[in-house]
Figure 1 (cartoon, rainbow, N blue to C red):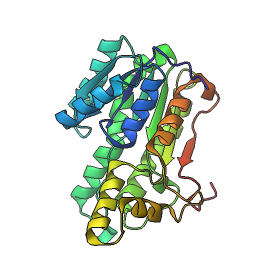
Figure 2: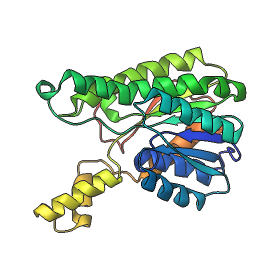
Figure 3: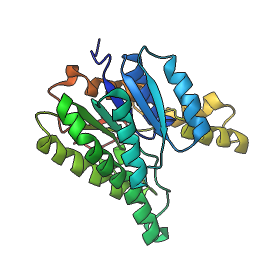
Length: 262
């Protein structure tokens, strides 16, 4: 299926690795001009080089910390200045620390809110005028934890829900010019999962990486965890006119692992 987004301008935050990078890769493969963002310069440079081999569009990288309001403003403005506008904003961010409720501090809660919620608020606020000019899209990458709480992830379970409330509100306030949706990924084979499996191999929990990967997928109805590009392709679809009647939705991408009915 052709998504017809060739030549469009897209910004994907927190995209030098992980699921944000998968979304940026999917957009690049469709011919979009893509701006990626990260804090680590070496990782960002490597991601730029990789993305430039994926598609025909331009790729730029902009360093910035998503908990810094001025950095977010600069990332969005540099993207718009470089590409002459912005058609698609994809928000992504790393996860907050795990742990039970009684071990979290006020600082932990504020840090999680700045990272997961205010980064989206600030990016959308800066991007909105350009998105409205071109009839654009916003896709928020969050987590399936907003549908079904995950043990020991109280910060993610609680704070990410604010992004869904924001997404639903914006889908009405920005319509019909801008469509706003969210994707809620379950486990995917990102570098974080790879590192956890490697640690399990070192501890003797698994005989090999392949055995660890298989074990992590056993609880999923599909018998595996996700390929990051499956999430990335979902994001690219939501950015395209092929998804032109999908607005204000939170789409779980977890292979059916969750038990929530809605």
